[in-house]
Image (tube, rainbow, N blue to C red; front, side, top):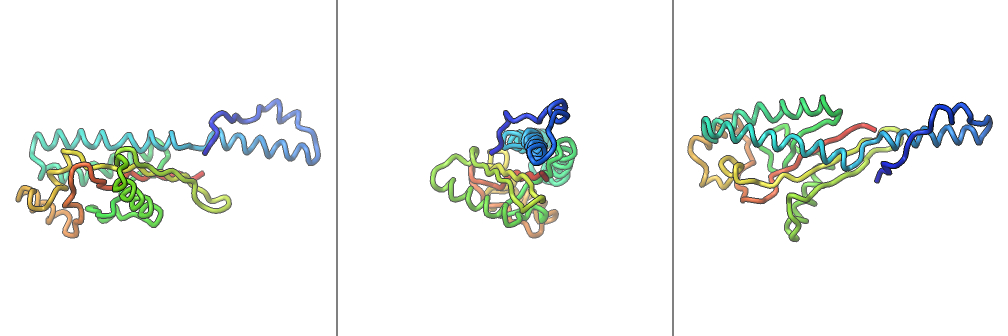
Length: 204
C-alpha cells in the first residue's frame, strides 16, 4: 500500500539540513518521501486498466453493426493492440490483454499473470463477481521493482458471437477464426465467465 498523503520535502528544508549523520538521514527521508508521493498506486493502475476495454467494445459494436461478428474479428485483431500501445504511450504503463485460453498467440500470460488468472477463476467459482476481481502487487528485488496490476475481463453478451460455444458460432465466424487464429483457444465461454484480464506494469 502506498500512502498518498506523503509529500516530498521542500527545497528550503533541504538547504537547512544539518551536516553529519542526522543530515544524511533527513536527506534520505526526503528522497523516500518524494518517491512515495510520485509512485503509482492501485487506484492509478485501476484507472489505466479500465480505460481500454470500453473503447474496444464500442469499436467492436460499431463493426458488428456494419459487417457482422466475422468482420469484427479482424478489427479486434488490429485495433486492440493499437489501443493498448496508444494507452501505454500516454500513461507510461505497459498494457496488454492475457488469457489462460488465449486467442492471440501474444496473449500468453507470464508466471505472475497466470497465477493471478488462476486465482480469479477460483474466486469466481467461490461466488465472487468476476467484474470485481483484480490484483495489485509491487514485485522485484532491490532497485529493480515494478508495480503490477490485473483486472479480470468477464464475457459480455457482445463477446458471445466470437467466444461462445463452438456449436453456436456462425459458420462465417468459425471460418474467420480458423484463418486468422489457427491455434485459437478462445471459444467455449459462457456469459459472465472470465475471458482473461487486462494486465499492466510500470517500473518504479
